[in-house]
Amino acid sequence: MNTLNKLIPFDLAHGVITKARSGGKTIVQCHGTFDLIHPGHIVHFEEAKALGDILVVTITDENNVNKGPGRPFFNDQLRAQSISALSFVDFVVLIPFPSAVEAIECIRPDIYCKGLEYKNDENDVTGNILDDRSTVENLGGQISYVGSVVFSSTRLLNNHFSTQTQPTKQFCREVAKAYGNDGFREAVESFRNLNVLVVGDIIFDRYTNVSVQGLTSKNRILSTRFISDDLQAGGALAVVRHLKEFASNIKLVSILGNESWVDDEVRKYIGPDEDHILRVPNFTSIIKQRFVEPKIRSGHSGLHHNELSKLFSVNYIDQQQPIEKIQQIVIKRIGEQIKDADLVLVMDFGHGVMEPLVREFVQENAKFLALNCQTNSNNYGFNLINNNYIRADSFSLDQTEISLALGKREMNFEMELEALRENLKSKYAWLTRGGDETIGAHKSKESVHCPSFESNVVDPIGAGDAFCSIASMAAAKGLPLKLSTFMAQLAGAQAVKIIGNSESISKSRLLKSAEAMLNF
Image: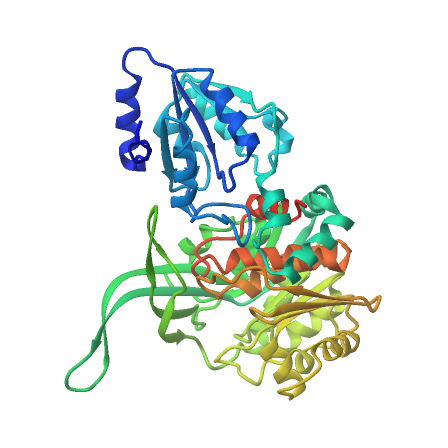
């Protein structure tokens, strides 16, 4: 068969394979990323083809590959063409989904082939093999394990290709040597039994998607065409969503207004037993509305987004702060939960929850206090970590926040972070510097410099919250600084690929990314 004729679009694949099945032919399916074709793949495909009549290879498209930053190394077209060139492969289909379930449902194989390493379910950190098996069996097929010759595309790419910058590779090698993938996975699993209390401002992010048409002829005003609105859970509620991927017992104390839509939005993410949010009649539930234009580029598997172009924002927010009576009610709700909390994570956006009385109570009563005191357009220059707090067991902040706190534009970041850590009597401290690096400091005087993992940014909003969520749990567990920084940086790298807070970070994606990046 001509190589070009082997490539079939996902939306046509089911019909094509159904037709090919006529006459009682056996359909065999292999599925994966297949980033770098090597002898192990060749044997895998040959052994799979020997089990039936028609071999269909389905490939995860580049938008859904879950092997960490820099992957796949080869794009959709090159990977599909490489496999199509193999004589024993009959059809190749790019799959626009992150898991194999949709690929299996599309092809409906008689035999679905996985590598021998997947005979042990525990070897799959995502847990997806269980879904794969049940899908195959529900469709009347069976799983067969093949591949008598095993190589690792990821190990070959990590060691011999420029999947990451040299500083990033070196940092990952050091983590791999000290802890390995098993040590990383064990550390992440240790978060499961943490009791976490989140205190802070809930923010709803409204993304208004528009298409820019140009300037009006009379007033030279930017003219746009409305496409859609998307309301997302941000602020402390976004952090709760991240934490729930890893820990089973999360509580939230915050303040919201009594708007009719609020309860329905909150219930999408937390249940009544987790909700200790105070509803205040005269308080405006915070909405930060951003008018954005997605940058669209064409991909081999369709259209997808690059970094958003943010045009304008409008904040729905109160200027006056809650009165002392409200603060006392918030303190009472915190007091009811704080004694059982292994970790109290304060998300202070300066929007009314973390007022002086509340800050004082939390600092006095938290067993382990993790702090994120943020700067934004509403509190610029006023919500400073060293002005508002005298204690934090761990904290994270960005370059703008440390510059404002210290009143300096230029500084030795490592030295100033260490000084701030000492002033706050912290065990851990992190300074995130966007696409440059993250600096970590520890009470042992150890410091680390972790390079940025992800250069292909879709939206940086929420990346700091994702970093803080993982870093705080790692700190509460007393994990080593380098390991803690690596896992939090991975969370941030995952978050910048997500539009705003439309999704939480995924534990399975974090584990899979680490597995790939630590494979040397």
